[in-house]
Length: 389
Ligand SMILES: Cc1ncc(COP(=O)(O)O)c(C=O)c1O
Image 1 (cartoon, rainbow, N blue to C red):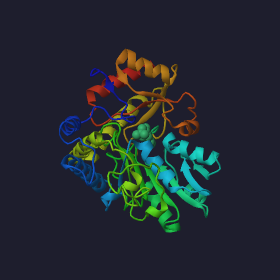
Image 2 (cartoon, helix red, strand yellow; image 1 turned 45 degrees about the horizontal axis):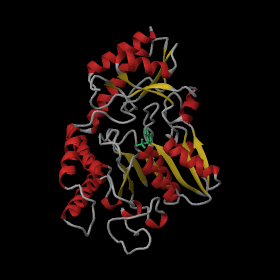
Image 3 (cartoon, rainbow, N blue to C red; image 1 turned 180 degrees about the vertical axis):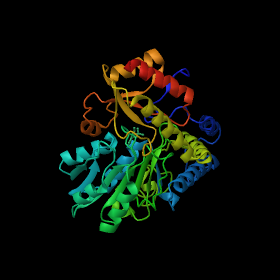
Image 4 (cartoon, rainbow, N blue to C red; image 1 turned 180 degrees about the horizontal axis):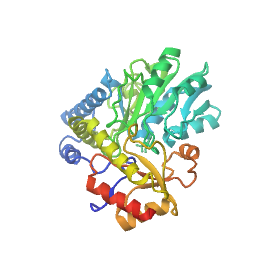
C-alpha cells in the first residue's frame, strides 16, 4: 500500500513516525504486563510508562495535574466519558452544527429520551466559524454544558474556543462546563486548557498527535470535581479493589478495565515526535498545502471549494466538489485511477453538510498531513484539475 498518496489525515494520520511502531514493539517485547500499582515489577513498569505518557500529554495541553489525564480508546470514547459523566436529567446543552457525530449522536439520543434539552448554534458558511455571541444568547439558567469542536472536520476551520471559554467563565463560572473536542487540532494548533478556559478537553491520539489507533483521552481541568461526574465505564482499576464502586480518584474513576498499554507506549513516542518537530511547523506545512489547492482550483468554474478561500484559519482539511461527479465517484476515481486516498461523503458531520447545502452526498475531503510532500501535492492537484477538465 506504500504507493498510495494518502490525503485522509483528518480520518487518521498516516504514516506514523517510525518511533511509534518501534516503541510499541519494544514495549510489547519487554514490559507489556497488565499495569498495576501493587503488582510485580513488570506490572509496575507498565504503570510507570503509562504515568509518564500521562505527564507528557498533561504538559502538552497546559494541564497542571497529570492524574486528571484520562486515557480512552479514541476521540468518541473520550467525548462519551465526558458528556455522559457530566450530564444529569433536565440539563440544557449547547452545541454547534459543526460537530462530529461523536458529539451529536450522544446528545441527540439524550435529548430524544427527554433526558436533556439541546440547542445547536450555526456557523458562517463564508468563514466556517461559529459566533460566541450565539452561544451567549442560547444560554439558559440550566445550561450545564457547552460542547464545541475546535477544528471542523469538514471545513478545517478553527473555532474561537478561548473566546467561548472566557465568556462562559465570566457569565456563570462553574455552572456551565465547557467541553472542547480537539480531534482535528491537538498536535497542530496550540491548546492550553488554562489560557483557553477549557473545563474538559477530549482528543483522539491517532490524528494530529500521530499516535496509533485505539488511543485517545480527556483532560479534566482542576475546576471540575469528581462529585460532578459519574463513571461512564465501571470495572477493574488495577488497585483499590476493596472499594465496591469505582474509587473516587482521578484518573481511575473514569478508567475501568485494562488500558491499551501498547498503544499508549506508541502515543508517548508520537507526542515526543510532535513536540520535537514543532506543531507550528506542521500547521504551516498543512496550511501551505491547503492554500495551494485553493489557489489552483478556486477559479475553476467546475470546482466548488467550501468555506473560506484562505487557509489562514484552517487546519489541513478542505472540502470540495467537482461538477459532473458525486463525491463518491470522485473519491473512487482518485483511488482507482490515481492511487490517491481522500474521503468522500458526510464525514460523520451531517449538520455541517446540511448547513453547507451538500447533504446528503457530502463533499470530497482532502486532508494533507505532516508527512505529505510537495511532489505528492502536485500529483493531487493535477489529478483534481484533470478530473474537472
Ligand atoms: C471533529 C471530530 N471529533 C471527533 C472525532 C472522533 O474521533 P475518533 O474517530 O477517534 O473516535 C472525529 C473523527 O474523525 C472528528 O473529526
